[in-house]
Amino acid sequence: MSDDPRLRGPRGSARVPSSGRASGTYRSGQVGGPPPPPTRGTAYGRGGQRPPRKGGGVKPRWGRIALVAGLVLSLAAAAAGIGIYSYANGLNDDMSRVDAFAALVGDRPVDEVDGDMNVLVVGSDSRDPDNPTGGGNARTDTIMMLHIPSDHSKAYIVSIPRDLYVSVPTDAQGNGGEDAKINAAFAWGGVPLLISTVENYTNVRIDHFVEIDFAGLKDVVDALGGVDMKVDDTIESIHKPYRTFEKGMNHFNGAEALDYVRQRYQLPKGDFDRMKNQQKLIKAIMNQATSAGVMTDPGKLDAFLQTVIKAVTVDENFSLLDVAIQFRGLGAENLVFLTSPNTGTGQSPSGESIVVSDDALAGDLYMKMRLDSMADWVAANPDAVK
Image (cartoon, rainbow, N blue to C red; front, side, top):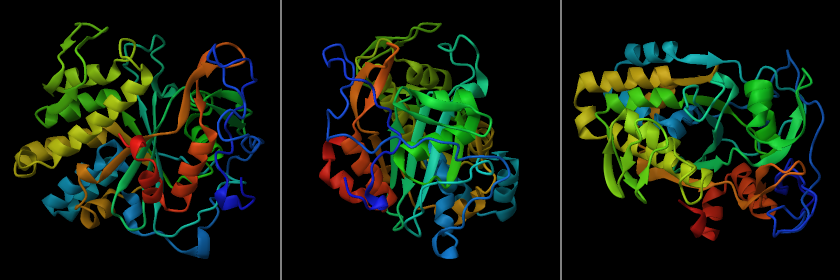
């Protein structure tokens, strides 16, 4: 791997001792040779300021399009369709905010390219029937990296498996500092530690943060009058009222859609299939939100926008108005869905099931994201596109 810091791959992919592939345990250096050593240390503390952007410039307002990964290209299109500044400002003021970056200081990835934008999107679900603790914001099973290129032609959404085994840095409170599944960072240190963990693994600088309450998506789907989703294989839900989801195209209401994207145990590829179904739901919501039936109905449009606002939390610098007015043209056809490259499941040293990073392929993907060349990576890896 090159010594050029721009060309380094994942920096914090955890190394699992070699003990044989047959049992599913990762063999260090198995794919693409050994990666750079994990980056550790306390790089984050309270009261720090974000380093200035390269060249001291401000990125274009396109960057505020974070919610595309969580519904929001459709939201931008809808708000712009209304054409009322005061209304859009009111929506922006009503959005829940989190101080996602103030606690991050020190050795963060360099911002290589002007005009692109990288957004960390997470999905939390405090009412998930699979969550016996009712963990609220201490749990996130959906982690996505959204990359908006500087030419604004596409939106790339990379799903990161919740069980991906990585090095979690130590935060100012002493949380982390060990190898673990990536979603443990959110449970241990909240948004800042998750951001630091993702940056440590990908070597990509995060510009915005969006959290989606998946339980809140029920109301979003209902406000749209339901969504159309394709079911790959007939399955029965493991949650009450034990719905049967028939193979083929289905029209789901909110409860049905949320139930379907929660399924994993009876799916052939478990969490990987669940990630794919969550991506399908995002696309289905965007398709329905930008349809004539919603855009030409002021009541339905307002209900949709209001429910989206209640379902998301964004960082303090996120501006909905900029998105709504300037970037209403993108639609579901402009989304490219990917999964962070991995070699499948394995075992941690303690014996728990994990997802093992494909360091060589992931390193190349995140290098292209960092250098704003995602189209090149997709062209070279067409089978990776969902």
